[in-house]
Length: 73
Ligand SMILES: [Zn+2]
Image 1 (spheres, protein in one colour):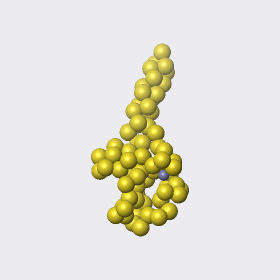
Image 2 (tube, rainbow, N blue to C red):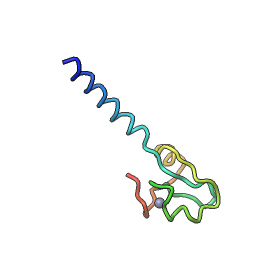
Image 3 (tube, helix red, strand yellow):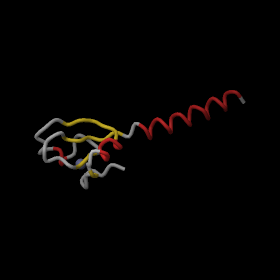
Image 4 (cartoon, rainbow, N blue to C red):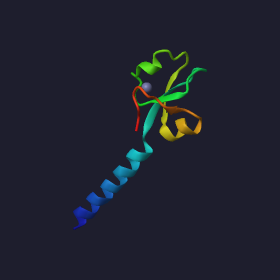
């Protein structure tokens, strides 16, 4: 029973951490307004600034909207 409890605890923390670690890619250039699921997205090709990996909640809070090309969930 002890092992089962530990396994459940592990599963619970795993689920929580993956939700918190939902990362997306944004461009720091002046014309950027989309966030991307992958840094290889062609929407980032025209980026004139730096490509940064940030939590999706941060990207949304600074006004970025989801990229229609790579669509992060
Ligand atoms: Zn994209």
